[in-house]
Image 1: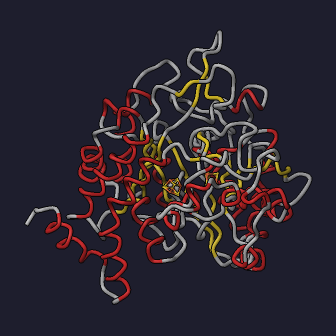
Image 2: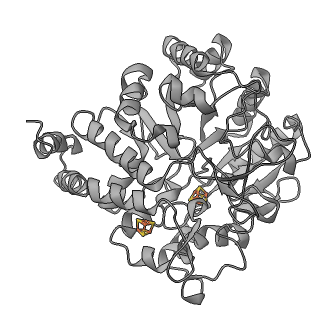
Image 3: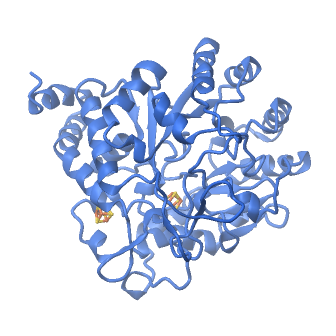
Length: 462
Ligand code: SF4
Ligand code: SF4
């Protein structure tokens, strides 16, 4: 997925990942309703462990981590941020990861990965808050413990704290930086605001200009919300022509909230919580499907091979029968751990809740935590808890029931069903003829870009 490095990319961070291993970010999971909910019945009432799962267990260990060096601390107050509220879980404002713990993490992470390339993903909250010296220390530690492995760094930022010094650090150390930007000014500024409610679009666009001047490699991560509906083509053109993002990720925002006395905005909560309502900024299933179709139609007639949209890359991978590199479209997931500022480890960025805590790197190594049955069960549950509709769906091979964090509805057999299903179905139906063309081109060792004349003809543009 992208203006990218050799490997696929995380659906959430936009960062290069080992295949089928995504850290993911995004809106919150429902406490007690996630894939590891012990009360959830499993498919056919028994967990399924396939030959492929066994292969995964015996392959060299290779996993991602998303490190939160400053926990959920952030200088912004984006309305749909599921991670800001982790401050409550961690008892208020969080400290920056200590030097001692940083060293322990760097060493354990490199040691645990039995592959030649180890990718670090710096995430938040806002990962620039610890300051430049924190990253200088981290880079030195990476070299100290590299042991012949190649180290790569990715970082996801809201872009408002970047200055020329950061650009120099990123460029000099080949960071791939993911920039959170939702689209044109009115869409971005509606929800991505400072603690004081001030807009941030202009500041982020200054960062885009700095990145270009400073030779920083960047891509974009955009939240698809209610304001994005009906504006897919415009948003895509904005990223292509103004931001010049060669690799784009679009993530749907679908959450439930409650009003809490004394809290300045609705709190994101489990849909099971009493009084929970769908957040007003959530994208509708139909709106999300139309959004994807609209940007696909812009892309497929002129930009194939020049600009990359994560969802389209992953969809083509599914049509070709190879790993999509996006956890939401993987058969199973949970291969990208979250490491919090205090060393706590979780299976996924969306399931950072006490009941999903896997361990702490002060007590166990990351390798031990990665091998734990709880981590494995979390990933297998993505497949083992699918509803009948998904198992019989024509597009299951591509969709895989999408992400469990969006499974707010119930299928006809009572299993949790994805609330974006209608839109996903519309998208897969819409792209099917083009995906078939691209798959056939690839099978003849031709460029998938040759789909463009076919697309233009099919759409009556020539
Ligand atoms: S629950 Fe699974 S599919 Fe969803 S974001 Fe987390 S790892 Fe990815
Ligand atoms: S399109 Fe809908 S029914 Fe089909 S696999 Fe995806 S979520 Fe399930």
